[in-house]
Amino acid sequence: MKYHLILIAALLSACSTPESHAMEKPLEGQVIVIAHRGASGERPEHTLASYTLAIEQGADYIEPDLVLTKDGILVARHENEISETTNVAEKREFADRKTSKTIDGQKMTGWFTEDFTLAELKTLRAKERLPQLRGANMAYDGQFEIPTFDEVLALAKAQSTATGRTIGVYPETKHPSYFTAIGLPHAGPLLAALTKYGHVAKSAPVFIQSFEVENLKALRPKTKLRLIQLMAEIGSPPDRSDLTYAAMATAEGLKTVATYADGIGPNKALVIPRTLLGNLGTPTSLVADAHRLGLAVHPWTFRRENYFLPLAQKSGIDPRGHGDLETEIKAFLATGIDGIFSDNVTEAVAARQ
Image 1 (cartoon, rainbow, N blue to C red):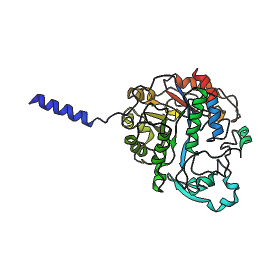
Image 2 (tube, one colour):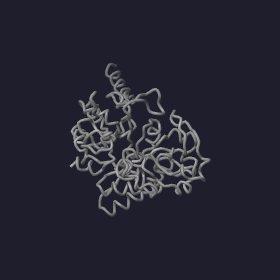
Image 3 (cartoon, rainbow, N blue to C red):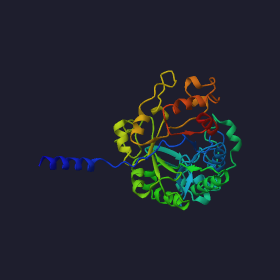
Image 4 (cartoon, helix red, strand yellow):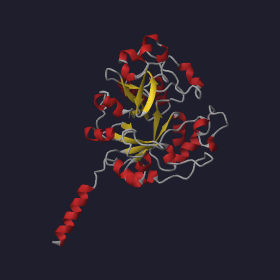
């Protein structure tokens, strides 16, 4: 009787333990370099020119943030509000499209992709999002279209053939619960596009990322592709006010993440926080905790401008100046991370080597 009770207890324990969907071998190979919005430190972000330059500089993955058009097409933009990254405000024919909306609890005023067809968006041209820091990039304002996700995938495929390297894609679903609420969910067109280009297996050069939780959980039974839970330094996922990123980043919180995701994309301060003076401090246990669960760790975002760098890596007081990004990256590589998001691919590749 005692043996049967022990057996039943063991079975119940096994059933109550959530299955881990984490990568079996997340640490294989070299640390991957993810071109954050392309080579966004040198070209207007989320343009084919930015992605192409990043590939030329040695990026392993290019990263498009994905929002949807009125006709349900995925396009690459940092936000669905596009006045900061396009010339839409200059287009008289779209003046009446300016409106105010609440996105993830934030009231925003401007022009939104979901109010435009793809054909209309294609009449716009991209511009630099951070002109105060990246004045040189403004020389390219007005030259490039808004690319579709299909065009980004086609570029990665063509460049893989041309370079002999596998160029991966690392799409982020932007505001997925908001888009679902207005009848434009990401999942269908996202998985259809990836399938069209042969990206279906877990070994495919694809990671799907999100700051939200429930859309990743919903994607889990629909795809074998690797999923990444993004984590901000503070706050909560937009779709889970009952949960904080800080709680998710604990050893216990990561156990839950591992039931639906293959890795995490933490704000880099969760890996190495900064001191009161602004220097790099003592690394946390996040990388080790994640690796114990088989979760890969891809922190963000590494940028060379003084404005973004730790105090010791700044080159002066001009926030636009370029500091010692390689030294910052090397400090993070020493923690055992598996990949890095960077606006500056050349420096990231050099640091890795």
